[in-house]
Amino acid sequence: MSALNSVRTALRSSRTRAAAAGATVTALALLGAVPTAAAASTGSAPTDTATPARGSAVMGMGVAAHDGTHGTPGGNSLVAQTEGVDVSGWQGNVGWSTLWNSGVKWAYVKATEGTGYRNNYFTQQYNGSYNVGMIRGSYHFATPDTSSGAAQANYFVDHGGGWSRDGKTLPGVLDIEWNPYGASCYGKSASGMVSWIRDFSNTYKARTGRDAVIYTATSWWKECTGNSGAFGQTNPLWIARYAASVGELPAGWGFQTIWQYTSTGPYVGDHNKFNGAYDRVQALANG
Image (tube, rainbow, N blue to C red; front, top):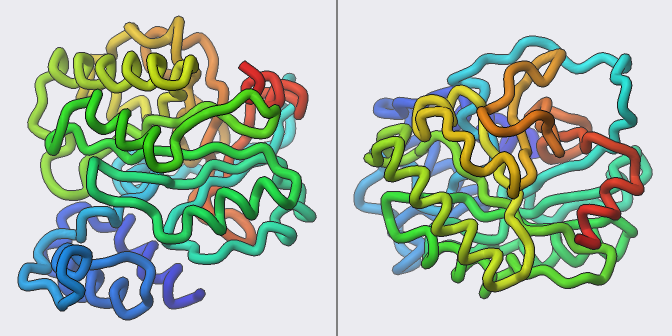
């Protein structure tokens, strides 16, 4: 696990990857954490290791590189906070009992990316968190340059991103952040990005009856949507900022529902604070 964590840290800390990409992707393949681009389709070694393999993106992988890390949150919030975790294929089989006993009460699991990647560990992670008692949901890493928002929302719902009113399932998350494979805004204008997000959000709601949670960082949102305020009244906000406080939120939102405050939390996964006591997590699950 220490080797895997080292690779993950290296991947997060480098945005250009021009020199290190080959070594990083090869290490990932050897660890079995994530397939290389060629291996994903043919089972063979990649012929081009200049960029990360499609499917290798994880929630928050660009946050530290772009926004830095500025401490950890203190315990002086006026609102009760409920600890949660997000995981992906990087973590493999997760020890959910250890997380539960440490105080983690909810989880989000990466299900899909684009329209061609599914988390090989999804079943263990999604069902394992549920079985230990957590309220859990799934997330989709968006790649707006590869297909439409509607296509990706449908792929997400069809492969683990659905929702049911069972009291233990959170609405799906659209993870929209820096592009690990190219230009930060995926080649889209601000208006084009807003349209893409709206396409995803509307399709997800039509399929599930729920508004997707939007995960993002304020600096990315400003750069790539022009700081759009179009989603603040409908979609819950999951904000990424590795600091002592949440800081400035994107336009349209007066508060965050979830705050990802570190990528190096105890045990495994990124750690998060739900902005409310446990009954508010239940309320989000119940819709």
